[in-house]
Length: 120
Image (cartoon, rainbow, N blue to C red):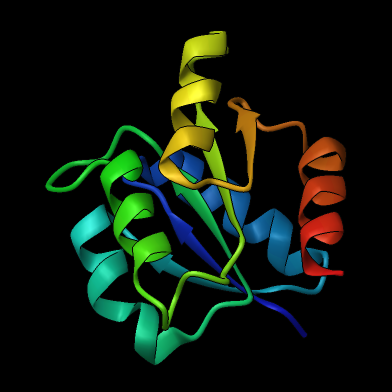
């Protein structure tokens, strides 16, 4: 079973997405902001990270940059999640090191296809 770290500060989004991913067979571990994600990533050892971009303390762009510049976490695939569907958000997320980008509200089949592609 693959372990996914979901970094999301919105409780409704976090609960809905974690339940849906758990039903699909993933182990989901939560982090509520970028600082917590950076602190817990070594203990969690996720196979993939779903990263909200607009987070308190340390935003998703900076959290991703730090994870991708650390040799211990650089290989972990990261999918950015954003309520903003603008091309500039996608471009900024990819420039920060995200491996893919998806919009909220999440369309589960589309997100699952991206997750599965990155975990192969």
